[in-house]
Length: 632
Image (cartoon, rainbow, N blue to C red; front, side, top):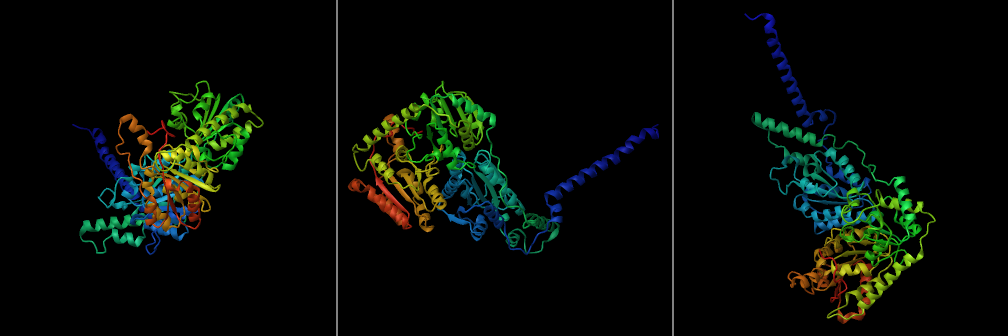
């Protein structure tokens, strides 16, 4: 027979089980209450009478960060933020394609050292930006992409233009966030702006569902039925929707800090700088390659130029660093880079990486000591296990490093014969260019001669935008930017179609500058419609089209290698007439006007000064100037 003592444990089991079950139930209820925002709503009420909307919070953050321009292609998902930006004095510039809006924001970022901002509608509006966002990622441009989205309640329910946008942009952006409540707009945007500029700059994406942008009364009308619910299920659904709506707007208009957060910019350590000083001090034939990263904030371009001049080392300039030393500085070497790298005993890769542009590092001599400085650790070591090896790898801001390096080598001089040898090679190459410019072509104008005349005509306040293959590749050898941050090309991604967007952003940032766009005829096809944008917004830019009726950079290799010109042929299209149809001015240059090139360029300048965008359609023939150049 069972004793009372033996039965006691079984009796105690049920209270413990019930206690555990009760605790689990309480935890589940508390978790559900937290997810539903019930606790938050106890302390933060909803102003149901307010006509304010989330777009105003977006605009407030942008204004607090000094944003002057918002580029867009309008869509109902994002209308509130566009209207709010306009009211706060942020200029809203609408383009004819979303990709142009991103390129324009990219140009603003590069030229101002701040974040360029673009807003597009949901679904196809966002997918249209992918190429430009990827270009910004590779070019390391801090761009904020604001994307509309379906209502938070309708995600994954088949709403209009609703796709998984976050998965699409996570591989392209440093920071991705989807705002789920109005009160999250301000802190999310501040974090995104800081992320875009910190470390290695790059694009960031913030998704703004339609119900966090529109006013309470409009969202309520769409979300909650005006008729009283019937039945228990109906009342339960109605309660859930009412609470969801309240949580969406709870605390929406409470004051929050809107200004910039501190940035995280890596700096070289004093020990690293000192080791680099010692390496360079022993050099006989030093060389510096400066890339776009050198022009990033916080180092101003004039301070960087002084540092490079103080250092006194011959240098090649690429990307946004083009023009840093002006038009004809004795330290700036422009031609024969591969040969110079083979002869150098110390090479400083300052914001330059060993990708295809340096033949993956194969152009570097194995006997050279290589110093590389870059904000991005992965880029810094690219291909170093295959073709080259750094003596010193410094992860830090390039401009600041160059200033410290110059300070550490104050008074150091190098033998003048090294720089003179490089300059002599430049002069020989330029003589070859002059010879090619004088050679006749089978039809139309010699592009080398045309570009030499462009170089002679280009004013000191000009900004050059380049978009194309063969014609632009030739221009890169012949046309010199007049100062720093006055040359805009796509960067390592090699994207066609950047021209109109870059020109738009450049002219807005520097309205007193002449913006000259050098287009290939193939590339111009992407930008033609945006002359409507230039006309509507009164943006006077000048486009020079090297029109050789083909995708010539490709056909140069395709025809001799594969024996066919398939898909490479275009026509000598009257692009100037198409531009005139959009309200711009159009001019034509051909063999019949060979002695009028400079006059037509001056006419185009005058038209721009009078406020008109201009297209100069330049019919050119083909030369062997770029035979053997990279096409893939």
